[in-house]
Length: 179
Ligand SMILES: [Zn+2]
Ligand SMILES: [Zn+2]
Image (cartoon, rainbow, N blue to C red; front, side):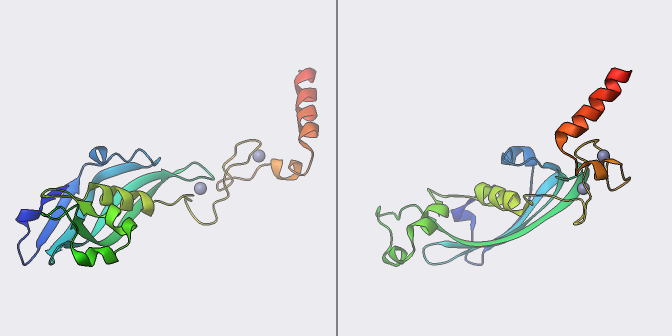
């Protein structure tokens, strides 16, 4: 997802890009992506930098943390940033950049002629994913004892939950011994 700085005219450049999720190194998440990651961006040159605004859209398949059911999650995130060249031709940063804090400079730099949006896109896709995906806000989850999907059925374990684990285990052992 690279743009040559020299390709951006004074009027700016519009990007419409479909990225293959496999090329984005999204391994940091458990999500599986269905179809391409869609990126739309506009790059406008300013005096010494390039202003970039855009949005990322994707479809992720996640697993509900409570009932383990698969769910489809639409990713939609917008971004806005200023990218500055790592160094000016004289090897020094122009005066006005000293006002930017270092973090900002680290994050949005480009070197040579290439502006690479890959990291920004990856970051926005990953940050858009929920930490605790739920198939629905009131998902009942699975019974920790018998594994029943409590969204679909109820089980008898609910009353046993108040018993001490040992008691439950003893009951189970008794049943096994009887057999
Ligand atoms: Zn669920
Ligand atoms: Zn149960």
